[in-house]
Amino acid sequence: MDACGQLTARGGPARAVRLARLAPAPPHASALLCLERPLAASSASSASPASPALRLSLRLTADAPPLHELLLWFDEQTLAHLDMPFLTLRNITGKKNYTCHICDAEFEQPNPLKIHMFLSCRTFEPDVFWERCISQLRSSTSSAAFNPSSVSLPLRLGTLPPVTPVTDPAQLESLAAAWGRSRDGHVCLYCGKLYSRKYGLKIHIRTHTGYKPLRCKHCLRAFGDPSNLNKHVRLHASTSNSTEHSCALCHKPLARRRDLLRHLRAHHPQHLSSLSVSDEYIDIV
Image (cartoon, rainbow, N blue to C red):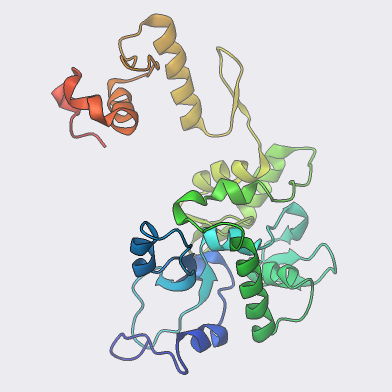
């Protein structure tokens, strides 16, 4: 960024991206590369059966101050198309200690290890890295038109290697939460997501490890997030005691009236005006 707050790219944006530094961890990224259709092509795609050209767009993650160097990384959709390696417990050997399970190379941050594994343990060279990225993106998007709304994180998770089994999941959770503490908050050692509280990080870590220590007292279903368990228990109470908050259109039981209104807005918006719903919940989103 120049002194006027304008993006400065010597040799054009493409060359600037190739020469820019990559963020050492996702929270440190000040700009994300996103694979998407140009706006003009998107509006014309409905009239033409041909798939519009794809491009990488640069998006700032926050306001960048003047004379600020942008650190680049990729958004989740682009990471999925790149098939960027995902770190598991065998790669996280300590706080600020990330190890390649193939060649035992060590790194202090997660993204350099991901890049190292993406390049098949070869030395990082910008030209080689970006050529590999472009080749992978072309290959992953050539079979079907890329639709940003159809690609989500679960699609990426489906191809990830399994988490290494551990004997004590509770101990693993405590260890990962302790290692993730930093000056900025609490960082997930698996994906780099930042949390302000240690409790939030511990609950998030369970999405990586699959640890579900909580049980429903009615059906013994396992949960990792207490809020999800509470919602589930309220559904038991709703179905056993009354059907006051059941959807009149699809008969789905809901625990609260506000949940009913959210359900109607999401699944039956065309019938919302004709149904009798209390006005006190009209402003709930």
